[in-house]
Image 1 (cartoon, helix red, strand yellow):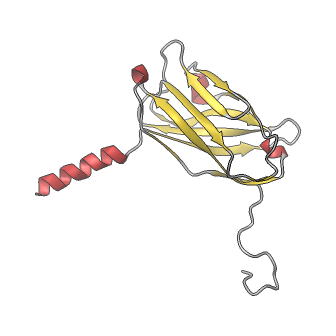
Image 2: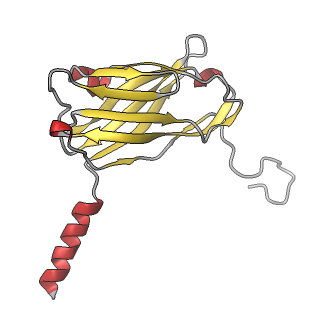
Image 3: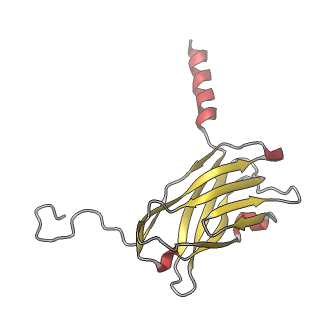
Length: 165
């Protein structure tokens, strides 16, 4: 019985572990030219391709006109990946020479956006479509915590209110 329990714990650990975790790790603000968002990756297996969308649906305020630009830099560029992005925030990256991003962690890529020029606040995250291993095999993946944008005020801000802290 003890061996069965240990085997189940080991198997469940494998099933629920992720080979790749992606999240937005930071923002550079440039209200004149538009800012950037850094996409961070932690991967225990080599990555041969990726596809995901920027998810700004949690942002509050006037989000009409938020667009994304070119993706550049990071481990994707180091691995000579072709990275394509569109104004809606879709990113697609792969190698035309069968190179891979080795296991490790760091900035996967940086994408331009104009959201820092808008009066918006709230979370921005990723929606992953696919992360590929060798020969296109799917890797397990997860999304880390969202990046909070803008000046978010939690709780009551009225100093004379009974619920002010």
